[in-house]
Image (cartoon, rainbow, N blue to C red; front, side, top):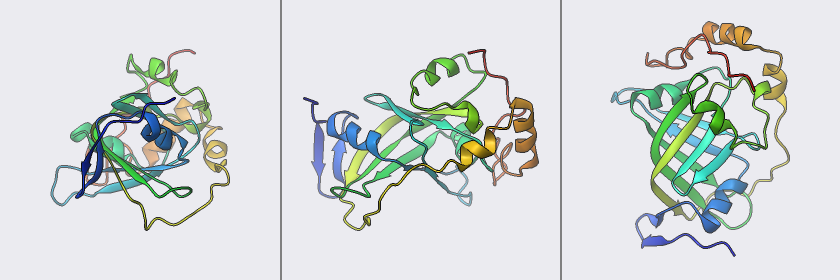
Length: 208
């Protein structure tokens, strides 16, 4: 039987957990989507909030570390903010079953395709083929604060299936054409606020 995570009661902050395990880990791993929030250090910089989905693109690496795959898109705000300051919050909501919201506040790092750690990290994502999605990086997050709250106001919603539009759009791209696509976008090589974003051109992946 899975051991429940030890937690510290705090009426002002819900429950604070020391690690990601037991029912907490099960809850996180079974949610079909989550959200990421980051911000630059500048007081007038742009706060970024992104939804993340696609089955198999998120994993719990250990009791204090999680990771997700960063795929092709029209900006790279999360990458830019993490490169500048590393701060990130991940959030999961229960749209079915008992109400719950879990947040992991921590430090994140984008591991790019030419990083020696990249290919080993990909072995932790056996349930998705990243190649058709224009894989850019693996985002690794080390938890500093893990907590949950009630989620009483979150509505019930049903999950039907993943959209296949992302795979269909980027499956036809190779590294060269993907780099050209990114270079045409205003907010990929640099963020909205001018911070360094995704390094271009994309380095080729190691043979696999």
